[in-house]
Image (cartoon, rainbow, N blue to C red; front, side, top):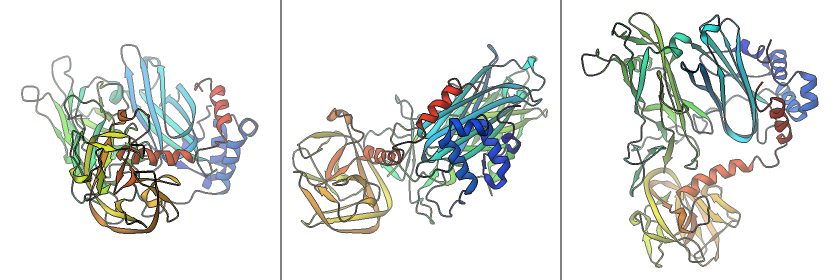
Length: 541
């Protein structure tokens, strides 16, 4: 018997399952088993034990309708790969949360369909929204009774400001004939791919904005494509590939017949939650996108190709994140050959490389646009220029000390809702709700600035506000400043818009991330998480 035995009785191959105390004995005993039982958990991990008690006494509230994003707490069992040459099995899994957590505990167990244990792994990660677990072990299928691998992955976490334990179970079956065979020679990813010559990952996908400079943009989705209910930008991302089959010993190829739409999964992980490609109501349409390729005597080798509708029927994340924070993708689907034999393919950003039925996708950034187009920017020579006229290479004044920064990119977009500020000396600024303003209370997104905040001018003078109000949407612009210009190492730069100190596009992303991280101050679980990792011998369970 293993620590996951009780919880895995609720495994669901279709999606992750949130476990809670609606079945009190099952939930409580199952979670405690992961930590050595009740006595050991209470003695060694008292903070976690209290969080479990809180979860048992208070069921989580249901999700509210009209949430600002379709990205939700989630987990994925990503690439499952087996190297035939050295019998090395690798399983990757990830937990991604909308809000920062004091810790994420991950437990993975791999067994065969006959119940034989292949191995397990456990780890605890602190102060994060996102954690990845990688399990590697030797695996020779000939030594086991079943060709099926049953993978179970349990995530436990406590979010900042909420001392209740949350538990999610994610399960996946990997069939040898589908995952470990060489029937698929290669998965050739056609999109998303890096389209800008000479540039490396990430793949940049921009929403409702246009690059005006030499910005590294691979895909643009333009126009007023906002959700009519919550005002959020809709999520678009291209996904296409062609799958090449191997020849058998007689030089023949087993043709493609169809996919199993019930196994189709396409998800995106933005480091703060996971969103899915919605197929409800368009199952037949999705199936029709998977088309058999001609035989080897014609243009392509035998196999199949697909080019999905880029509309995910979801919304982009509710926050912008720093460019260094990756967006990952996983697509998997089972299919049938004309012979009736099964197969499976994956497209994933988590694989080290493309291999057989796994296609490697570069990681992505989602970018979307914060100043109204007629906003004047203070240039390095003291002149004022409308932000719509600023170009790459122009120099702007960075701070009250006369610092100068070069503009590395200019972006243009449309925002549905803007906010206006006026000061007692007559300055007026209109920007997006999340554009950063430097205030007496720190750097804040515009929507959090209040009347008692002071803004700052080019001479360092404090500016008193006498008005804040909402204005209709309009075309907006933002600048990206060259970080090497001041050598400070700061995340994002500043410039003066309407003689008011504001942040650039990079600071806008970093500000949102920083505010989430602040909630994790004074983490009460740190010592226990260190003990967990020692107890699990660096992760081995």
